[in-house]
Length: 339
Image (cartoon, rainbow, N blue to C red):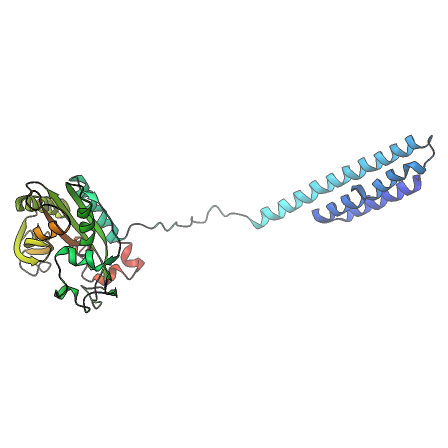
């Protein structure tokens, strides 16, 4: 038994010395000290040893175990130090090199313009409301006083899913949905993406964005509309901005108007930017048609209101002096990082 223990101890120490990886040390531990290891097997055979010899043999087994464990731990630490040194050599950092730049993104010009418009109207007590981009014909046309034979419903201008469902051509359906709920008074703007069957060029796109506003309350007049849009124009384009209302026609409103603002480049004296007129067209507006109020369950004898709509891209193009709408959609980083 003594010779067997000596032999086991020598073989274990020899293998530990020859090990060059932590995995091999673990294999040696299992082979000699594990549940089925050689020293464990010796302990299990103690029943065959004479009773008077058992204490000595047991002590020899424990001494061999302690020696093997100590050697295993010593080599384990040596291998770990060596591995750490090799890792440090591979991961040397040259602190004299310039740091890597972090490319941080920022908001798109459309988003910047939208947030500014929302800030202005929220500051005037308006609520921002959203609605579905795939809309019923009923809300996109019928409830906005656009009957079945109206030119705006032509298939050349509108994307039809079927005869009853369209891709919304404006965000006015959101206004109709809010009016239909009957929670008065209403002060809201409805920003969102809209779709029209247009060819892509410098000023048109089949997909673009609109911001439409609606106010419904008692005793609302055209003077309230003019004052609201004049304040909006000053906040957006500068304190000296003036507005001009030109008669127009929209099925949703009566009377209706187009709104111009004084050119913020030349102050109204005339320049290339305003094509020499001193004015720039920005939006359409008007008093909500009584028939629209009736279709949405609102008494036109008791309530009146006004509505307006502006293209978000138009605001961005004007504010940042961009001459081609396609630049907003091409995602050229050289263009976008200017804003």
